[in-house]
Image (cartoon, one colour):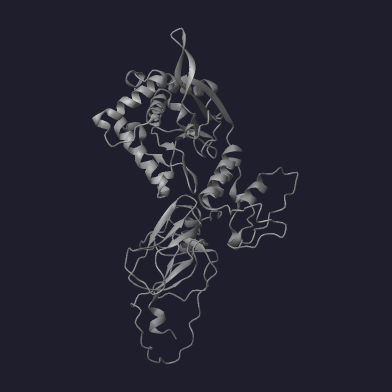
Length: 471
């Protein structure tokens, strides 16, 4: 028998704040047991593999319990806080009810179960009380669960459609990153034997399926989750070494870079260029009233130069579709800017950057950098990039060989701008010089196209008036 007190407690689950994410780390609690909360009040900050996000509570009440301490990584769909929505006042006992035969709990499909609309799903074996209301056909529930696992977003409230006369062929269960890996390796997920919980295909399963058929790869067992405060091995000297758990943004970045490096054949080209005129233009724009209050720096003009080069060489702005064996040329530019943050490297992008004027581009760059430094970059801001700029020059580095962001065909690295001796108009003079490096996917960008793009960027930075004549 359930008391009114028990019925008044609501459990708030870890939401899926970004498509395809499965876990998040609790960075900070803003409430404690006994605190009153209101609908929409931020109760904690969490870090996913993409960004730090503040979570609002969806109802009024009094905090009864925080289920996890700060620093804990929690699966999406797991309850993290209990709230007494009755306001915390003692609730009377419900009157005795005549005894009835206990209702037989209907079997539920194993694996990830639908949770609150808009808050994603999670793998959980927690036993729940039967819900009242119309029953959902098993086939429809299974389809909803597969839609969540396949990265199609959260379930939407809708009138249930009548079940089909014949059950559709079920799609193999795998998370979006695993599906991407399978595409890159040319593996048909329908032929892969899953070893993950509830029949989910893991990265190890895909790699095993991609191995030569003459060998019999042994499936890698799924490792048990490591406790947050696991003791160090006996051979580990804490006075000489520090071990940091790989999670959040750094974990996602590592996986993406490994996947990119071993999937796309990288080629990098370099050019050293005199950017003295560009630096003079930067100083002039800082005094221009149209740029008052905006961030004006060399990166602004470098970004504009790359956009003009893409306009002149549109095939560089493309991606490789392994599944369909197609090159997808994008007619828009979502310009990614690599940003170093305390939580690791992230690459938010400016949507439709090709349509922005120079002042609009300056404003967008300023917002992007400020948001990244505050750790408030949203997951959507880091999705859909088409080409990227990484400015290693801010660290005093001359140049580098950048690794492509997954799904992109090129990335431009900008080195430090230094005063160097340079032959100018037949004489050796001190000039502002930098080195540019362009890495590109050699499957869809050949040497001619990559060289043209890099040469165009260098020519614009050497003679910035070309921004007008070439735009």
